[in-house]
Length: 288
Image (tube, rainbow, N blue to C red; front, side, top):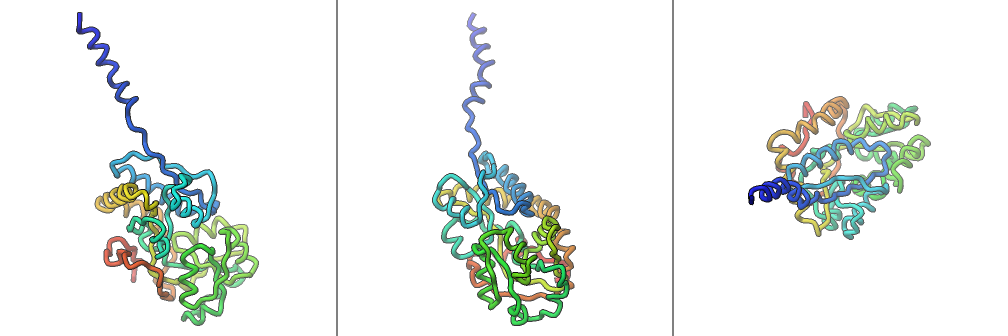
């Protein structure tokens, strides 16, 4: 007579266990200003896979509002709840403000720069062989990007903008001479602005040591550990390299970097903790 109530209780147990399961933690990343962000598909896939290996369940979603990097970082630093994680190029100031996960998710390609130029001036950079020669021309950059400080520290002329799309308009109108973009961005950005009279320079690559990291708030060290744990797992089994190659490997090789003149710049804003000695983390184009 006692077995039937016990069987009923056993049958209800899975439902009760499921109901008491801990829901995944929400994790918000910023909706960027770029209408067609070439990095986003790769970075969100990388983050999703890393989180799946972290030991903690997260529910990843994009913020409702578009925002520049500075705004996103302020949201994280102040623990407003509007944004929880951002990917951005590292700098001393950013590592003071936020907690970096020091694994370069771009394998350093954010510091390999080719130039978008006006279509009517395809030979603009053909004979540029020195920083002094490049300094005769005006580059465009976003005001809050670390690249702006790097270019200026190397003596280059710079015009800044508060809007990403505005830089393409400035270039097309001739108000700036060139717009340096990383090799993982340039081709897709040119394609997404095909309505403007722009072209991709074929002669020069500007290179400086740099890294694109995930950043979280200093109040979320456990989140940084979870992301780092997942990325290390992906590095160990090769899935990190596979995902990167699928998105960017052929793209970078297709720019024929070995045929271009390389102009090396210093990055005085690169933190000392950057893992430059860990060679497996960094991309090296063929023939370099």
